[in-house]
Length: 292
Image (cartoon, rainbow, N blue to C red):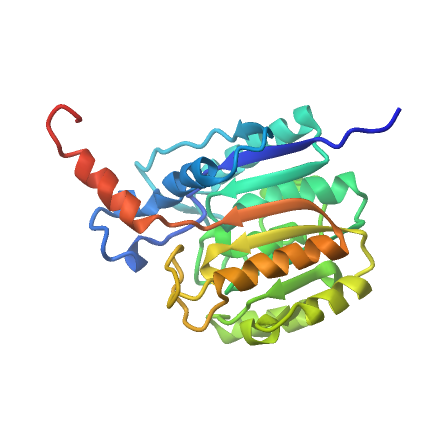
C-alpha cells in the first residue's frame, strides 16, 4: 500500500525568544511590542490559504510578569516548556512535512530537528534571513531567536539541546539574503562553522547559485526558513529588522519555488512577523467602551 504523505500546519506563536521592544518605537507599551510575534503568528495563519491541512497550535504562555535571563537565555524556562510542547505534537502526529507559522525565528528549531531525525540527516536547510542566527548563550544578546541556527546544529544550552531529536550538519546549511552580521565575532563564527551564504544581490536576478548549492549539498530533501526581515524595508516593513537593501517579495517567492523544483521541500517556516499596525489597532480597540 502506497504511503500517503502527511503534511500539517504548526502555528507556533512563540515570542519569548526576542528582546525587541526597543526597536519598535511606534508601539509605546513594551509588553504589547514584546508579544507582537504572538499576534503575528495568528495573522499568518489567518492570511494563509486554507488548503485543508490539519492545523495544530503550540500552547504559548503570554505571561510577561518577569523576563529574566537564565543560563544566558532570556525566558529560558518558557522556551524549554514550549519546545517540549511542540515536540509532543510532532511525535503524536508523526507528520512527513511541516508548515510552521511563527513566532520568532526559533520556531524552526523543533520542526527542523524533528525532520532531520525523521529523514536520518538526508535533509538540507536553506535559511532565508538578514541575519545568520548563530549566537550562543553568553553572547551579548540573550534572545533565543538569534540562536536558532546554532540550536539546529546542536550547539547552545545543554538542557534545551538535549530535548531536540537531531541536529543539522553545518555543511548542509545555506544562508540566503544574509546582509547583517551585527558583530564581527558572528562573521568569524560563521566562517569557523563553514556555513556558506548568498547575499541579496547574488540571488536578485536568478536562483542559479542556490540551484548549484542544492546539487552539491548531498541531501534529497530541504527545509526552508523564511524570516520576514530578509525583505527590503523600502518595499515592505513586515518584521522587526529594517536593514536596507534586502530581498524583494517576488525574489523570495521565486527562490522558494525554485528550491521546490530542485528538491522535495519537507519543512517550510515563515517567521518573525511583526504586525506593527495591527498591534496599534489592537491597543486602540482595548480602550473603547463596550469592547474593553
